[in-house]
Structures are given as C-alpha cells and as structure tokens.
Length: 160
Image: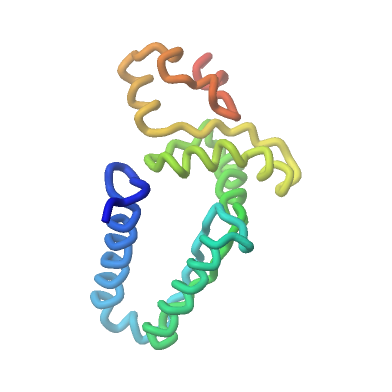
C-alpha cells in the first residue's frame, strides 16, 4: 500500500510507528518510575470536532487502557497549547521560533493571528524553518527563501 502523505521523506504511518516504538521503549525502560502515573499533555492543531481529533481521542483512550492507567494523556486541540508556546517565547525575549518540522512551521505561522486574539496581545514573532535559517547563515539571498510568504514576516530579523 502506497502512503498517501509523507513527513520528512517518511510515510505518516512510518512516523507514527516510530513514535509508538519510542513511547514503548520509554515505558519499559523507566523501571521504578512506571509505578507512578505519568501525565502527559498532547497538542494538535486540529479542532476537537474533526475526524483526526476523534482518532487521536481513540488512541489516547487505548494508551491509557493498555498502560493500566499508568499513562494519562490530556489532549488539546485548536492551538490551545501552541498559543502558550509562542506567547511564552515572546515573553522570554525570543526574536523568532525556529522549527525543524514543516507542518509546525506552517501552523505556528499561519495561526499566529488567532493566537494573538486568544492571548489578547500582538506577538509578531517570526517562525522560521531550520533550512531557512541555515540558508541565511550560508548567505543565500533572502529573496530565494520566499520569506515574503510568511504571515509574520521576519523583516526585523533581517535588518539587524
């Protein structure tokens, strides 16, 4: 079966399998810590009414059941945690956020106006993708990086 989508050259199915394997290794290698309940917060960009969110809800319930209640996951949708990350970065003095994840880059940039409305203040924090930062460091002309397509343009970064 051909994967319908890819993530960094890997099929979504392979990426999900790798995440599940890493979670399994982490659970079995924690020894005494496994006696405690572990509470995780999981963030997704999709709203709770979407099919993707409902699939994640099913997965969260399955993980909790399969772990015997030792692993609890609180699922947040619609940028509920993403807005906090951008606002926190801005408050800490960040000039930009750089991410290796193309989807994270897209969503953090595209949803920033919504996040600003949620937190009640202008953030204006550029979101860059790692290859863009590396290209800038190597002297690639900024025009070639298509920075003008960003919702929050990194103009102030380029001026300094």
